Amino acid sequence: MKFVNLTSEEFGKFTSEHFSHYTQSSIHYDNRHEMRGDVHLVGVKNDKDEVIAACLLTESRTLKFFKYFYTHRGPVMDYNNLSLVHFFFKSLTSYLKKHHCLYVLVDPYILENLRNADGEILKSFDNRAVIKTMEDLGYKHQGYTVGYDMMSQIRWLSVLDLKGKSEDQLMKEMDYQTRRNIKKTYEMGVKVRTLSIDETGTFFDLFRMAEEKHGFKFRDQPYFEELQKTYGDNAMLKLAYIDLQEYLTTLEDKHKDLSKQLHDVETSLQENPNSKKNKTKHTQIKQQYDSNERKISQTKDEIAKEGQILNLAAAIYIYNDHEVYYLSSGSNPRYNPYMGAYRLQWEMIKFAKAHHIDRYNFYGITGDFSEDAEDYGVQRFKEGFNANVYEYIGDFVKPIKPLFYHVKELIENRKK
Image (cartoon, rainbow, N blue to C red; front, side, top):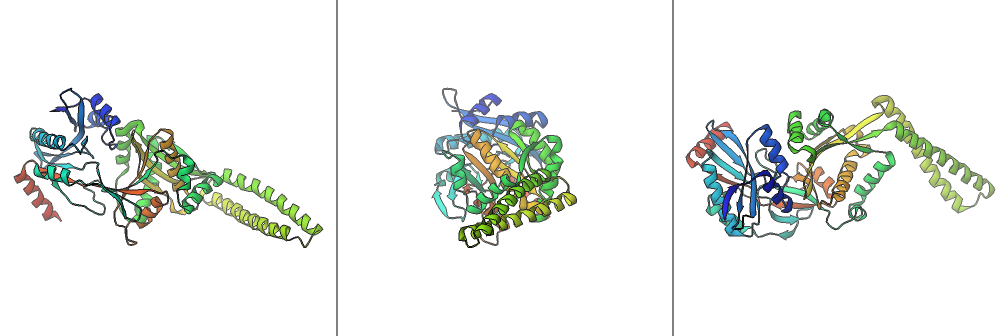
């Protein structure tokens, strides 16, 4: 085996053929290399000159004179092959020493547990040998964390398995309320369109509403613009919206039909006043008529107050050959009755199926499954689509220059 720098083509071919995170992609490397020049491609080749491990690394400045490296859910390799794991990380240490590295953060994209939405373990994966191999080389496991951390990728992801399932089957496996909400978006005429990078502000306006609702501050608009530039056509901003004038026309057409049905059943009752069947039918149609009349009135008021087009919800997605990732989103809480967030998810699940992608990744949750969890509502939303919870192995940190790394830790602790 030999540890080498890989070309973008070698790297892209390997990560396309082997399950990997979207950050481990040639498009990420190519665009980031052009924009920042702070990215490396390394890997291992066997005696036949075949790539058997690959990793995209990024660097950033720390303590003025040193660099911090991060493996972005890599490396991509067979972690059951412990000799390969040992060779890669031993070689990586040597590589980083040549590049003025202070320390490296590694977060392999390997599962620790598969859980249901309530946190109950469905399947466990024994990673003790991997952890021991890495710790023997000085890569210290950071533990099994719960919650969000701005300095680390989330360890808990909510994922819907699409493999071998039709759209009808996926819909049937959702809970009743989620299924009903999606169907209602079709009845109301909710639509989804792709936003251009020049329309990132439209997304960000809705994203800020989510920040205000949940009381957090995540990223500024330029971050999302750079994300789109980095991932090119593999990044998409999607907007769910409704044209209230079109919806009003649909309601008015329905009202004409209900009015005719009501007239017909009332005529039948005049001819046969004791018909239980017609009495029941009259009650049902009258309820629909009154409900539809209220919707017409509400929609007219909404148009007068808010305008014809309402931007309901927006989200940024990235995809690769293996997964579609739902990364960040926002919605206008005033427009929740139009269920824009549900339509967004369903459209992108269909996108994944159409592109033969087997996983729809709702992305991060805290891993706190109590009713007091800060993301309890978010977890229930994702659970409604029949998503399971994928718990990953977590982070490893390797100080390459231990003395200066200790200095960095002391400085950071004083700031707390």
